[in-house]
Length: 141
Image 1 (spheres, one colour):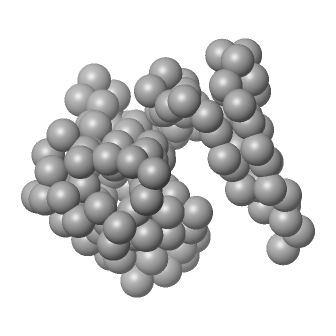
Image 2 (image 1 turned 135 degrees about the vertical axis):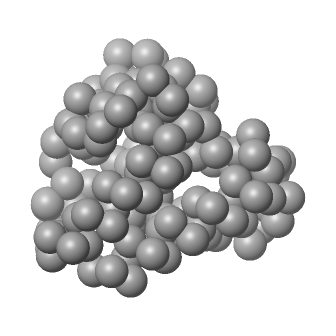
């Protein structure tokens, strides 16, 4: 951000959330932030609330992410890119979102925890195929 660059994320929990949070602190106008969602914010919010109800994530995780994305959209509507054609959140729409991220990114910095192999690996493969510079940090949890 200090060099005038920005970030593109997929609006997910953990790394996407933390990266977006830091970017907002460094770029309060959010004009160098792009968050691409697999569905509309409303549907995405419903998905995360459902996952919290199922016990997959906590209610706090869901509401914190939803709050961040809502704030981002209010601050700069162009920063939040909603996919209005998709009606559900599933592996297919997440992988489509990964493709969309790669289309607008100049490089990829990925953080791959032992439990996040599929989604991260999908994005890494697409970035390499698009000849983007790729840096992957791998962690065991």
